[in-house]
Length: 139
Image 1 (cartoon, rainbow, N blue to C red):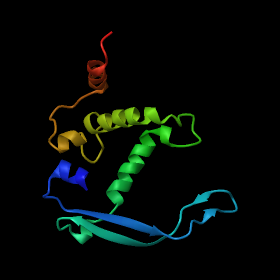
Image 2 (cartoon, rainbow, N blue to C red; image 1 turned 135 degrees about the vertical axis):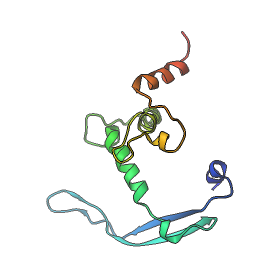
Image 3 (cartoon, one colour; image 1 turned 45 degrees about the horizontal axis):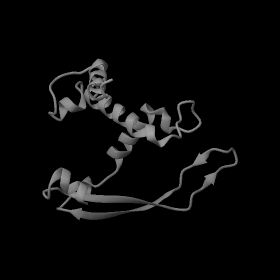
């Protein structure tokens, strides 16, 4: 809760939606993983007065899918999968900077950072390399 207030202040509408799942079906006879069945949801109002209609998960699920598809290191059984946890924060940071400041999603026609008003400049990968070089320890 403190993280939400630190970022957005006390004037924020914040709720949590939790999906309730039944017993995991596990593996079927042909060895594919089958997700557990959603048996219901619970909503908790944490701060402010959020609109019950707006408390949902699709935008977070879409973000997670985009991240998982871009970062194959999270996908087991691929040659990019990494078990070393120390590398994950760095890879996440690179992915988020690239997605928000360089990549132009088709529906937007501009970068997410431009849409949010954070910047009005379209950056490229060389700009990211410059950011990394600027923070690197001097030899």
